[in-house]
Image (cartoon, rainbow, N blue to C red; front, top):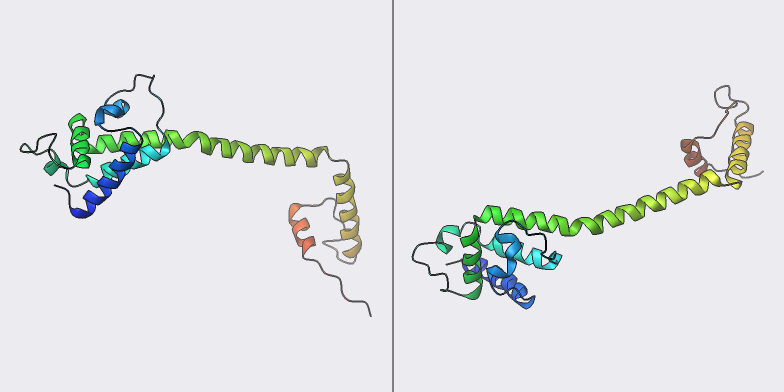
Length: 177
């Protein structure tokens, strides 16, 4: 029923699902209807395989669910797809899988973001609580005012900006004569 390319894609994804213990559509009860709350969250790898398997059926829904097709006829991947498509429209199943895939990916992404924010806050508080930083910035201010003393606009600075610190990194002295 599926084209050779789609059949190959479906077979690969179905083999991965079978290796993970999902041999028939009933093994994926959460995708067949409303979740009961006691199902375990599927691994991202399983959800990606299921997404790929459903993707292989795009454009072939009619041939997979045709009246003459028995639910048990065909290769294992096509039988599995028919079982899934008996439970609901392909687009709805794909959306449910995508939603679950997004939920499976959320916690790791949120944890990475939390780690980054914690690191940034720790750095900011280290600077705020530092005893050496005000002394360093005061020295930079004195040096800048001394170097720019002849300039009416730059000679009387009362503070150091982040922009001036980046410019300081690119400042070079003239060689002594």
